[in-house]
Image (cartoon, rainbow, N blue to C red; front, side, top):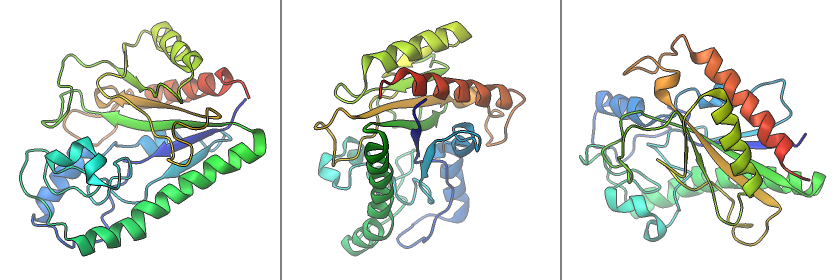
Length: 251
């Protein structure tokens, strides 16, 4: 069975520095509750698995490692939610990002994170000639105000794909898995795409990637970051799904 690289970009609530922030702690806590992919560092990780977790050690509110470093390439930058968030989900000013602050955060946090992800991918390529990334996320049942796709009702789970790096067998295996479990699944809806390090992006099909997002209504108490009574079942479902992905890739 293939070892997976589990990319976990949005589980942390740590903000290393509040330089540039214009809002108080209570407002930051509200954004954290709204935007954090709660417990994905547990839902997708198990010590018994031979996977390679790569988790950001800081909140997406501080630095979003899934955004392009250059705001000119990032669609969410026009909403003030590029690599360094400048606005809240409500559209209120949240942080003043100077060129100096941007440079410092990218150098100290963003680029080192991506270097870790690249190292994990290269290690798998060297070991077995193949690397499989699972991009681990969760999302609210009620769309964020700045979501690009606000359609409802939202599915229980969502996979995101890349036309070059997501083999069709992973898509087909995902559809079969969630259908058999009685869950609804969005394919590239409500969120689309999946992370691939730029060193291989669009160049090397040996690097495969698929995103899995889980609807937070399945495992959190409403309006809270607390686990609900269904948490363990959802976690086991995700672990079983990872087994399916690991066994669906031909090395």
